[in-house]
Image 1: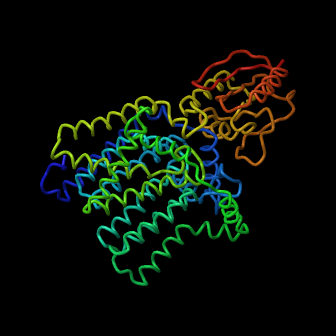
Image 2: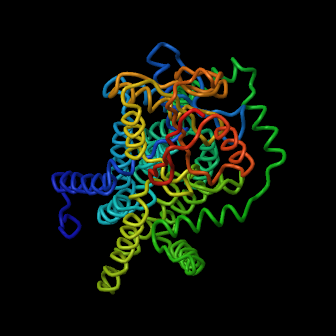
Image 3: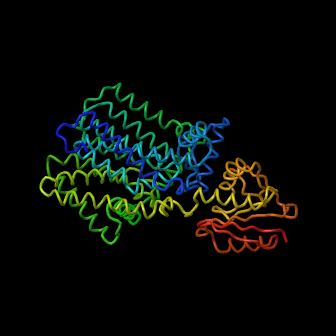
Length: 508
């Protein structure tokens, strides 16, 4: 709307950003609430939010899959508790929060791209962020990792202010963004060397920093990461020792890094993986060309270092998936937007078609995957969708006819009833007024408040078995579960709820 006007005034800018934010919201709320994903990780973290409201203040965040001694910061859990305090325990409310939170990134993307290039590039970059399939997937996944997207963008916004506008306060904003990113996942510590390299490269363009500026930067960063400092002291520096021990055996994981890069291309530009290599080669050529051009060198180097910093965790850790790269691909969106603007003056038809093609690719991916929830690069249990879970509970309670019943589940992880305990406590008890009894002792050390009985002879006559998606369950664990259950109960009927089932059973 405003990209074609000669004078891009503040009023026009505000209107454009509001429309872009609305577009981002529409994309992220497509298929809501039928694609709200809720599984073990979400239930576990929501229980932590409840505990915080009860006064159990936390110094560490959720458990990490990488190590039992490494934890992200607790900020995400305090955010969950705040949402609960204001709006209750419905997971759909949390999903609303995540979608709005991610959509706010359009504003930061616009500001960054506008400062590096101009406001036309800012508008196009924000459009690409608004309709980004990758970012829409982050918005669907309720966990601490996707929350890093805004702090990462804040980090690079501060650097653009410092480098391209010579504003010293930009370094303070960067320090805040970096610290908050690390709060949401310790792996974002890898952004620290990226920041140092960027500052080193642009050292001659930086404004003169006074001692008070450096003192404020240090104070802001320490404040944002203070929970790490306190927890390391409290727990004998176990996190630091784990990092040092693992770093001695670290090496470059090229396969995982190339996978991450190809995913960036697939999820943002072209979904046909057969052309990924050629698109990547084209991006390399474009970067090389821009770095040869003296007037574009500083801007292209900034985006290149941003991108490299984003893939560094994959190179070092060898991890695949979405978890460590909340903002890496945005550098490519900005580069692509600048390319579209640059070639528009000579080849307007090609420029428009190229941009619309990328938009169409993202929309196609969103229409294909987003109705199902997060994809399998993010989650391991497809189909754990809240609307289906609540329908399963309705089926269970209605078949119990108001009488007591027992329930058991084949879960991922095994023998942990955290997901269903949360659902029964929030939805089941809230709607039907009572809780079932769990028909076995759940694994210790995991959240959940359902009463349980180990004596199967004392359980109610009516019993239900919930069977979660079994892709990640070993064959012998399945056989053992069903063999044991069939010894005590007989199958009455089975009903599918998408990718999981509920069996109604009676004591033999």
